[in-house]
Image 1 (cartoon, rainbow over the protein chains, first blue to last red):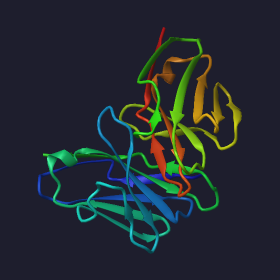
Image 2: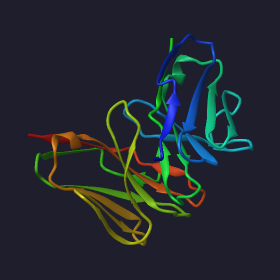
Image 3: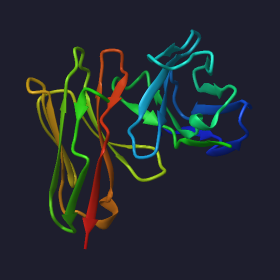
Image 4: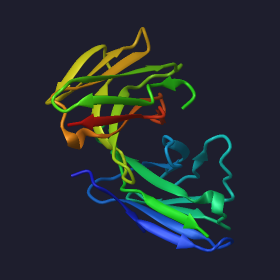
Length: 116
Length: 109
């Protein structure tokens, strides 16, 4: 149990285009999902917290108009990187919190984004 | 994260024991996690400590001292497949995770 999927697993896009990444909890309900970004040889940095049915909360320094987050259901959150630039190339990872397990967060497999 | 520290690299021999230390500072604390991450993959959960003391799970053990803001991950009977990055992270009261930079462990034959 407690599986989180992400789609796509990797994507290459041209500078200026937008890319949507999906994060799904497959066998549990997740009222809260988290989006992280990881640059090579660096740790995970929290970008935003996605709450079902409400607006996402963004960490300091993360542009909310550039990284659009939608959490329309208890099993799906999406991150859209708008007008992507090469510096947005990174490994994007989501995690989901199971409401029935107080502390546990389950991570998705990640999405490798390359902007050319 | 800026308020969580762990060593950058450690090297050990197959079959040996390695201890990865982690110190943290936070005003709100809801637990300390250890994750394993192989290159190009997402982190996988190893352990969780919310009370002081040692949690043992097979070859891996984790220790927490809340008063000292200190944790360690102990890896016993090292295997080649244990070569990976090990991430220390604390959970704040709002369940957000703050990660350390990770410790790259290299296991040599």
